[in-house]
Length: 125
Image (cartoon, rainbow, N blue to C red):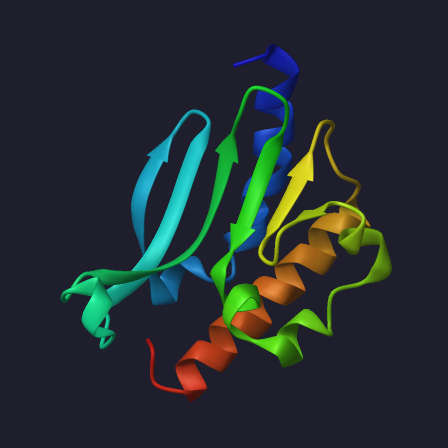
């Protein structure tokens, strides 16, 4: 992992700080932070395993923030600020080559909290 990506990873880790009490940490090691539901998923294809919520992962070219509620919620997708849309890859992934500013981290935090609230409302947590 490039040394500068460690700083990017650490800058992005607070994105999930407000969600961690309601979720389970599946992985927490350098370059990988993964959160999932504490209880098994009701979806048959998950075969009783927890539901993936989000992650921060370091790759070869960037550090990614994955937020699964975005993939499953068109209303939540509409809340993505234009600045963040520029960093999107697919429906639920944001890529960073350098540490984001505080405003970008705050926007990601808000999306994560909104996704958590939505999942709680529909009974997925």
